[in-house]
Length: 574
Image (cartoon, rainbow, N blue to C red):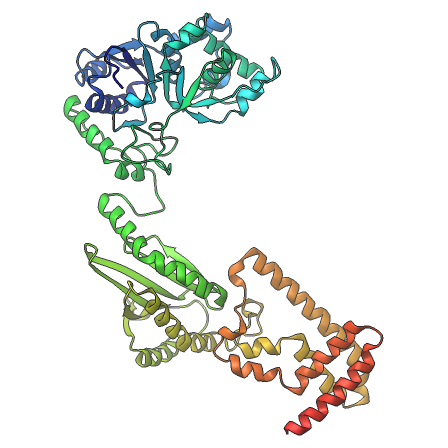
């Protein structure tokens, strides 16, 4: 598309605190659009000294327009005969410069195309495709419910499309003036005032964008979505090919380490501005939950996720059913820690990824980490048990002591091939199979009845917790005497109610935390031994009793016949 005969203007705005950001945008515009742009207008109240330095970026192309708060206040009063709404007057986040975009309508008298740009954008390509050719507006669509609420106060909304721009990038065409006959800048101020008086708005956000959507609707102006601009850093469409990246909200290039590191061109522009202005500006990035402050940190973190992700996805399927959960530690070398609610937090398994030189030299350790527990256990005795396990499994150990030479942490570790995920999983499952039971038994042998550890650890204990087994035990024990028989109804009723209550509590627990769901019986080492319990006379007796209860009135006779049959079968087996 050849626009050599068309005049193009860019509009920016901001105070002296944003001089570096405005300069950054202009540097990008010049790099990619030197022959396309005729004028860059900057609406500002920054001092002349800073204006002069920005002018050095692109001599004879930059024009500054005075736009202090008093100018805005006067414009608003002239258009509406009202005072500025209180929330705008008191706003400290957005400031009055956001309303400078209303002047784009005035500039259409002298230019064929006008483009408004927020100061938090990065220009990284030609903006030719952003020009509103053969259309009135180009913009990225935002929420439209406020516009619908506004329009509903004046007339019934018809089938005409309603849209509101995201204010980061708005492209205007001279066609707009041919389709309207009123001073549109003043109309924008009037719409802002009405939005507050009608209760459509209660905050500053979007007050500078809504007027454009309303004017487009009322005057049947056409608009098209921007495909190559106004792309937020986190947008799935964001790439090096799009013309403009808009660092919306908290993702500013100068406040977010993520945006700064991912979009290095903004930093290149900033270094150019420091050279021109002969001033250095240090930025303080917002605190991050990830330890990423430079490109080396970012590369290391992404590389660790690259290699750990296949393992994590497979581990989720294999261990979530085993009363365990994963924790991805945000360390630069990458750590996947595996916990279980059967154990305490000081004892866990983990995979520790490390890269040494690029991507070809990586390693991973499978570890069993044991920290000194607050529980009252014989820690040194406990370590001896684990050291025996380490000898069996070929684990190395690293001991960390305090100033008093007391062991605080012991790490048992083994190198694994992270590029072979199945091998890593098998190594983990083997280590767990030989270490989990001894750990549990040593830690909690005196606490198994406590509510904290009221979790079934073996397949045998889980089968023994079945209602069939418990009722069978009661029937066998108490049916041997008249006194026992007299207590049977009460003990049976109490056992059933207690079992139902436990089941209810269990369902509530796994609803709130699915990780607490008990694994299938076949996943336990003693699964085959547990199956034998189901063939015990006591288990089958309880099972028959439950069947007779559910059968109703005729169930008792069925139960008697079943008991006789069970006795005969067990006599033959014995």
